[in-house]
Image (cartoon, rainbow, N blue to C red; front, side, top):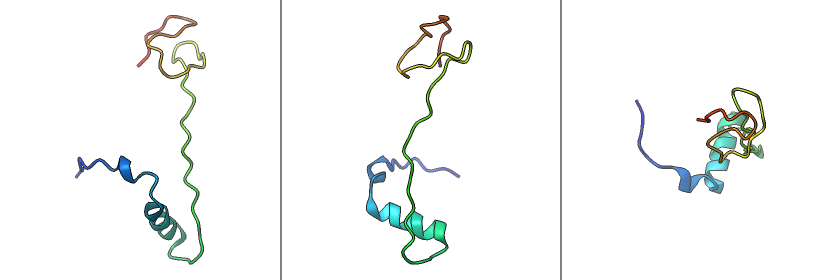
Length: 66
């Protein structure tokens, strides 16, 4: 079952962080979860060149990127 609800507006909500902390800690008081918001560095699947992320083609080998 899936939902079509857009939750991006709640991404930086303190209430979401508190609820996630409680869930992860098993209900322990004072536990604060750090939610890491980094994206993996994109690389070309053909040559392994590090990319910026907005390219349509690899600047090194010309491979079409997804």
